[in-house]
Image 1 (cartoon, one colour):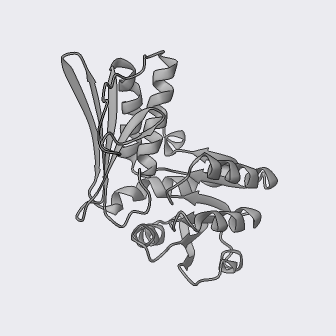
Image 2 (cartoon, rainbow, N blue to C red):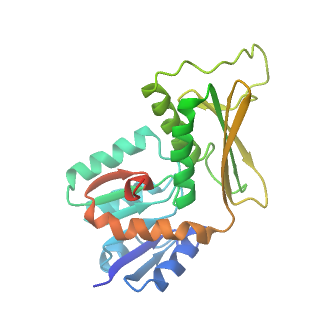
Length: 248
């Protein structure tokens, strides 16, 4: 039996690509494609079992509240999920324990590997910083991927009992050293011509290491999107990060 899927933000860049990928998959059925102005009631009337959300940080929580309270599993690629929003999602799921929710800061399988590699490598180096580069239409900065990477790095360094990273900067323009997330500086670039790119720079005495991932085309995110759609109904509760669906 095919999995019935609805897409929110279907006319956006990621939504458009997702609609094509879902339509081409033999085991999935696209039952609704919603965008601005469309009623969320179409999610229930379409019989969707999974809702894929690629909308906007300002509207995503309303969408998730409707879907979860309607007993529909959700896969979320919309960015801007801080700890407050995550707790709100957990609270919604606690009231609807049969529903699964997968929130992925990045659906690129290579990007997920990059984050895992960076966290591992950070335990061997004195310093680490992140540069993330995206198109100028991106709503949030730093990106969800960069934020997640910084959190993974900080957790790994804490477990390894690494010392604080050295930085004797005593004066400078605001923002020149980036924005810190869990003590890891993140530098955000917004530039026409870019899609989604991230480089993690690690350094120690006498050597540096760069770990970089580049999304050249949004079709590269689709294997991860489809993996999440196929997995979410078997994972009640919250799953944060695509790495939890991969054998890494």
